[in-house]
Image (tube, rainbow, N blue to C red; front, top):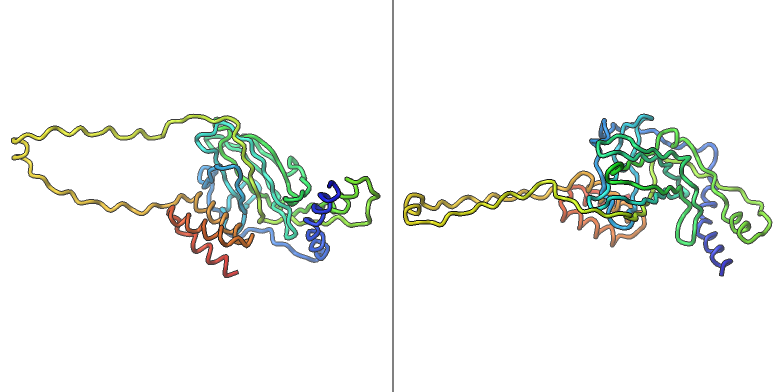
Length: 295
């Protein structure tokens, strides 16, 4: 059974080796960012609520661009939900044949000050398993009182780098105690885009008050013949309620989820996400979906 599992893991990553071996030293990758940054401070970023057990997201051309101390980078921003006091987070950046997003993580205070920084050297290389690719992996905790915000980005210095991934046949031989095979470990390039995942585990929940108290009810006085005679009833015009507008962070979240579903060829999920986003007030989900299926 152990041999079967190792064989399946090797098959899962076999394509990684085949494609990586075809790249040459003459290949030129584009890690520069010419588009303007969206924001000049962390407080202006759009934030995705960290709800559910996991969040699959992509850092791509639809993502926000921030101006960080090292320069511009595409990024994703996340925030703890109000009912979570402490959260354990596992961040995986998937290593694919096309490249990998080399992450740097900032944890921010409620006033958007940097409290904790995780460099790429703080991440572990997590080998592939039967159901997961190789990845950069980091586990950490966030707190509502000290670090409720998280930013994931990749400085240009990281984007210019690469990672040498252990060949699956070498891993299999080491697991079985066999002689090391004559294979070359594939080299995967860092890129400015990539696919990532957050695994979320709330540690402590909290109760909270809504930010705005409901308005006090107006007590109507009982009408008397005198007041009825003095004031004739006037029908007030009913104001049409404006259409709901989706927050920028929700727009970015839905668009990234739609893109991930299309790239996985899961059109049913992509359509469901698009319709859900439209009902919630998204003005870009349908255009994003149509643009993706044209490619």
